[in-house]
Length: 327
Image 1 (cartoon, rainbow, N blue to C red):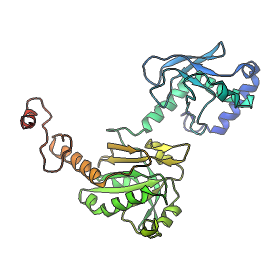
Image 2: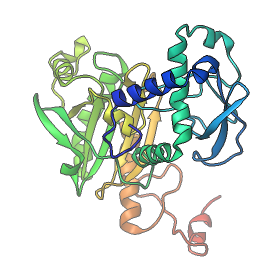
Image 3: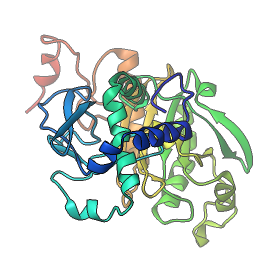
Image 4: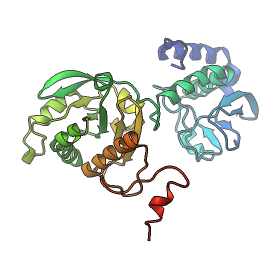
């Protein structure tokens, strides 16, 4: 769970924490709100004092999904599945606390953080692993292996099989929706153009492979996909969406992310749209061609660059050739 040899299950951790809580009735009686004191601008590994009421119980490693939080107040722990510590409010929220009627549950959740406080190395290991899996430009793309619908049948598709090729990995929220089929159809119809540039297009969603197959068996005029020219990956356990940072956990669906991965398996470009707005095939092709150009020629592409347009030599003196043409 927290990175202890990848083998400590959540069940064992819960049992341990329950025994810990029952053996510490003083904490059980006093736990209400855990307050993490004001933090300076720093990294996610900053240690800070944690208090229960007026009592200091240890130190915690700072962790917030949003860098905007300067004062974090925890009413229990957010995501039990992943062990992430979620700030639930930017100021004390007695009404939220009052809605949690089960005092043992409150104590269990809060002491869960206290255990992290007592063993910050555990949390740091977990934090390191989560950071290493997060999708970041210029870093290796997270590995994946998923069941996919390919030409109407199920096949295993992995990132490794595309070594030496560019990969455009795109996420959609759900099958049988509205924007999603327009995107898949558009990219499917452009599959040959991507292939001519040495790229493979993959689409992924949190649907099962059976739902995706059924979607391809529905005619386009009825809101289906019909036959498509690109693999559709089934991320039923959400690991792919999590690893690439696009999962909306409360809803179990992915944001509209696109990840351009180069032939060495390195992430070169990331675009993430909110759910209502689809993406552009033309822009994806432009970015692919731009990155290929820079890799091959060592020059950089200015804003709105199109193939055949001027590029810039990334040196102070040499770049003046480009800028001297500007009006």
